[in-house]
Image (cartoon, rainbow, N blue to C red):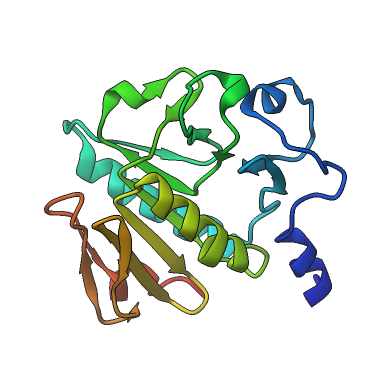
Amino acid sequence: MKTEEDISKAEEPLAAYPGKYSYADYLSWDMEEMVEIIKGKVYKWTAAPSRIHQQALGDLFVLFNVFLKGQPCKVYIAPFDVRLPKDSLQDKDIFTVVQPDISVICDKSKLDDAGCIGAPDLIVEIQSPSNNKKDLKIKYELYQEHGVKEYWILHPIAKTLIIYTLENGKYLASRLFGAGDTVASKVLKGFELDLEEFFKDMD
């Protein structure tokens, strides 16, 4: 069982990689575990997610996928490289590559064989004890900075969802949604999620 110290360490940059690293470095590594690079710092990607995490991830992906059939937007599930460049699109000049749980991209020019280059329109991160800080602070700030239009943080154990919507470059938070609520996406017009139905078998 993970201790609070283990969880805290999982949310900090990896000590074995003290320098600044690019996507080109990332491509050259042969690691057994997956990592993310955020502003040049290397973070461990959440390993062996819980059963509930995976159930929520799979169920939500299916709902998005069915809704988007025949539409321009495409949905992808982790592992899926999302590169967030600042200026240059060269691998050596990209210092952020993340693995969101779910990414929805509506601009096909951002898609290539390696994944997505540029901000997805909608990102979902599913909470587990080992990724709370990274999702709630580090990735929140990162996605806001790069212009992700809608950021969902779903907590399958607490059975809650909060949606951050980008307005004038800043995220505005929804209230905390839970069982009994039906939520709608402002980015994906017509998509609604009945949280009572969605969470009912997640025990």
